[in-house]
Image (cartoon, rainbow, N blue to C red; front, top):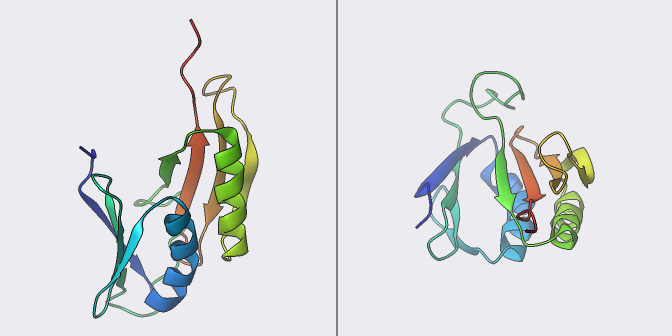
Length: 133
């Protein structure tokens, strides 16, 4: 069971945000579902992600470090998968916040990248395998 059932994100332009999210989430195995004013992706028992239009135009983008959204981390199975998803996101128009690299301040095995979309939504692709015995 997923920790969170669904995560709704407000965006300025749903079609533009969909163009950025869809290649990444599809590459991760999520299935896209279009509704009248929103778009969602689901993947079995994982958290459903939903993009919804802003109620007030011109209120974005979100600024990292302000109260609210910080980032969403996707745990993936390898460093190569971090690299692959990072490249897909960049190709889809996400802005690179941090290139894929190790983060020894977390653990010596922690490898991640960070990207941000036009709405200021930041995601992380990370791989942190268990310590070998």
